[in-house]
Image (tube, rainbow, N blue to C red; front, top):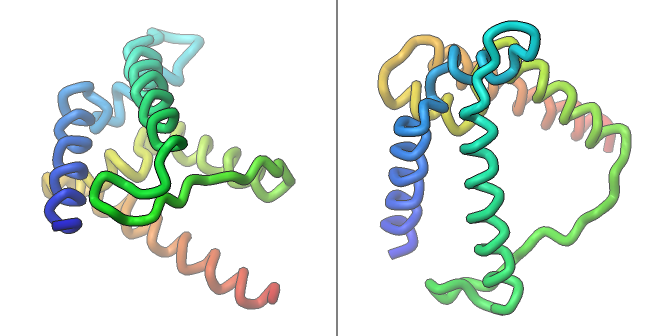
Length: 138
């Protein structure tokens, strides 16, 4: 049952990204181009996501189990350090250069678009490098 709901959630999320135009790297880069032809539509999509997410988290905070019966594990960290800031900067640079972030990358990969496959491959390499560095640090 959980797999069915996970698939349905991912499918709805992917359709939402396509309908909002967020799987189009040019649309994302248009939002980030403050000095050129700025496209504010991504701000509206983000605002809608923040509103829906805020309502969902407010609801989830009052529960000890999910609607499917699994225990709730909500984030509770509030520590900001160099690694967090560095990761955000690196994410932002990659997002600005490629116009893609992980969600739309999976949509592009599923649609058979080469740029999405390259992004996902690079993302997996980056994740593997992170794991290797973390193991070496410990």
